[in-house]
Each structure stands twice: as structure tokens, then as C-alpha cells.
Length: 155
Image 1: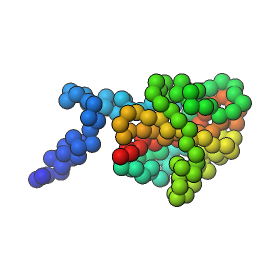
Image 2: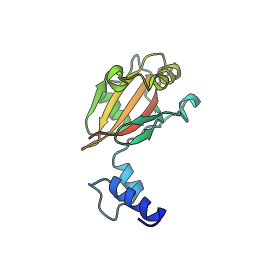
Image 3: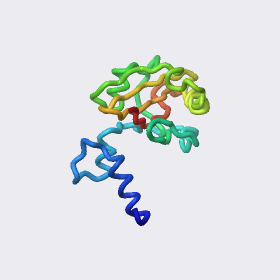
Image 4: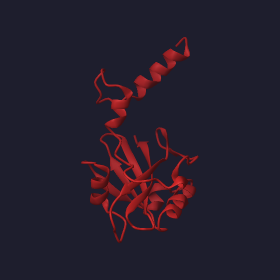
């Protein structure tokens, strides 16, 4: 690889979704495995978190704010799938399984502070090794789900 452009092209091809056709753009590729995560105003504290989620790729935490009408509790897996427009598998994950080493404690605390102090973690499967993790809480007025999401590649 003689220059930066060739190397970047090599990396993009190596990390491309195998299910994409050669005519798909990187943006179209990304849309195939991401979900709708903002339908309401986002608490400022959820923007620009410095941590990245470490899997086979390092991905930033992105803010989540989903309008959900007056509710008494956090959504379950089926309700979250509907909120984010996902037709595949969504499963709850224990906090301790999401963060077994305590390296995302700041992220969990920011989500708790943006919401009502309780947090739920969900794994959203996108086929193969790709998944998203949602860390969410109920906003104080209980009319929206707030939190963060990140992409994971799990091989």
C-alpha cells in the first residue's frame, strides 16, 4: 500500500458489510444495521461522551431520545423494538453483562442522571456479528426514553 488513500480504501473494503452489493454506498451500508434513535429532544448531557464501546470495533456512544407517551416503566424488548423501528431480535442484557469490568460506569451514570435513575440495557441484533446496544432510562416526565446506543461487532 503506497499511500494513505489506498490504505483507507483497503480498510473500508475489509470492514464493509458482506451483505452489501458493490453499488451500495457506505451510508446505505450503515443504514442496514442502525435503528431510529431520536424522535424527541435529547438531554445535552448525553452528547459527546468521551468513551467508546470496545468490541471488534471501537464505536462511540450516540444519544437516544424516543417519544413514548406517558408510561410507568422502562420499555421491554418488544416495546423498544417498536420504538426504534426494528423488526429483528431485541433482548434485555444485565448491566453486569454489558459492563463486566466497570469501564462504562460513567456512561451508565450519565444515562441514569438524564432519566429517572433506573437504567435498562438491550442488545439489538442485526444479523451476523453486528449488533447495537441501547442503554436507556425514562425521562423525568415519563414521556420519553433517553439514553445512548452504540454499535458492536461481535465475532
